[in-house]
Image 1 (cartoon, rainbow, N blue to C red):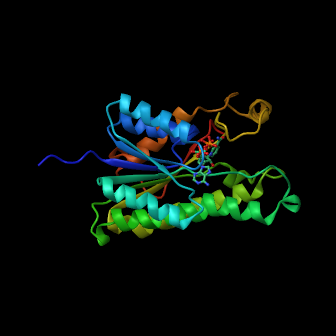
Image 2: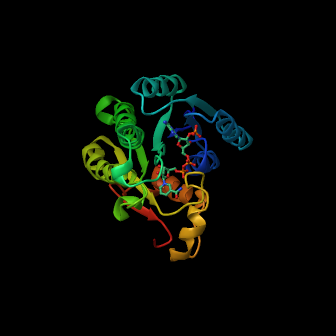
Length: 246
Ligand code: NAP
């Protein structure tokens, strides 16, 4: 009997790094389940590109701050079958300010999407991928940020702290799931040219970057797909900087 096409789930696959990863995954032979929160048109464009590459795309609307939406993602993924890997890419920064000026609601939203959402998606993924739970093993990749080391003072320290949590989650979960056949890694991008930055921020910051430029979403996607695939079979618990030395 022929094997089903492997399925990669990308939370936040509609724009930026997530969209580039979805397309790179299709190129590497995966069908892709990609989620979006608000931007259906962008998600549909990514799905079209995946179809053009001869693979299937499943577009799912989900706010990963909401556990019910995450349950829905996995119901859809279970119905498709063949889940082999998960990329948790969804994240927001909240409006730039000092900590003294930020609303508690922003702090909750950022932590709920960036960290709690990553944990719940990884938990549900582990139940499906882990050999202990009857799965075949697989790979989980979190998208962290170099902000976890630099702290994003004066801009969004809460965002940086959420990514510090993602780094710890990567290391701990990698050890927890290693005996169960699931590898867990993170990619930690430096400044990448996406919608995440307020207008003018990157142009201003470029002057301080060692490479003298920002990275592209496609350059991050290459690293993500290395960690997703068996090309990195002995790599787990790694946090791979894709940051042009920043
Ligand atoms: P982006 O272009 O702003 O895309 C963010 C993605 O997250 C979109 O797919 C968006 O969906 C989704 N999303 C937003 N709110 C969500 C929610 N409530 N629930 C679920 N998904 C939600 O961001 P990006 O720059 O590609 O960043 C991708 C990842 O890389 C993030 O984890 C970010 O922290 C990390 N990163 C980025 C940079 C950078 O310089 N860009 C640097 C370091 C790390 P919609 O399209 O529906 O809004």
